[in-house]
Amino acid sequence: MKAHIVLAHPEAMSFNAHLSGTSERVLAAAGWQTTLSDLYAMDFDPREGPHHYRSRKDAEVFHAQTEQRFNAENETTPADVNSEVQRLLDCDLLVVHFPLWWFGMPAILKGWIDRVFVYGRMYRSTVRYDTGICSDKKMIACVTTGASEESCSYNGREGDTRLHLWPILFPFRYLGFDVFEPEIFHGVGGVAFIEGHDSGSSTLDTYSKRWAAVLETLSSRPLVQYNRDDDFDETKRLVSGAPVYSPFVRHMPDGIAD
Ligand SMILES: Cc1cc2nc3c(=O)[nH]c(=O)nc-3n(C[C@H](O)[C@H](O)[C@H](O)COP(=O)(O)O)c2cc1C
Image 1 (cartoon, rainbow, N blue to C red):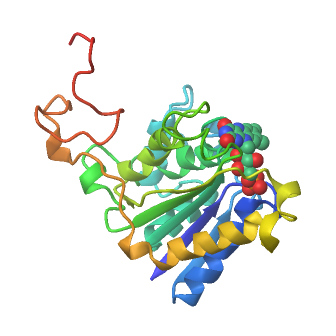
Image 2: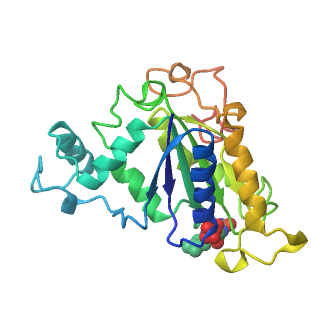
């Protein structure tokens, strides 16, 4: 069984880097073969653009999906993307570590998705969602926030982090992954706050143990629920009576006319 770990953090002393180390250690101890993409250490270029393509379908106008597909078909996908694609296709479990930055993911991780989720190779209209290329795989996100659990809760001032994570995790569902409920570590101040916390155990120790326990019990962890393909009609709208799992895909909201 292969686990691939993606880390989106510039600092080796960060909580996220430490927690990704916990992932490597705990998964290896459980018999997983692990690989790591430390995006900053790799200097991964998150900017999709013409500078990545020597061979172009349209040399005049750059259209990202057109060039992704053209290069996938010609086996000229950029090398840095190709190796990430291969790691995704090889793994059974994907673990993604990142801090919440401005209520979203760090730009380097967004750019990794933009480039590595290659149109024509990782998805196309007939290969996505229930029939996605990664539908035999699972993923989990390990996320830190600076804000407290209370302020990130459903009625908190920062907004509900679980809702912020919905669009972040949806690309993985789009590729077909079964997405585990994310694990969120709140109130993480950053490097300077790693040590010196209460009760003889640092926040990092406490969180690292909690994360290890998550990984050790992963098989019984609930999955994020998404609508299945047949919950939608031919216009791709939710059919009447289909279940609703998120405010992002819902039946007619109060007060909105069709
Ligand atoms: C650019 C930037 C944006 C941030 N935005 C948020 C945010 O939207 N919500 C939040 O709770 N914390 C935010 N923070 C705080 C980080 O989430 C926090 O420092 C991080 O989770 C700590 O983990 P680390 O040691 O791995 O960096 C932000 C930090 C930075 C640098």
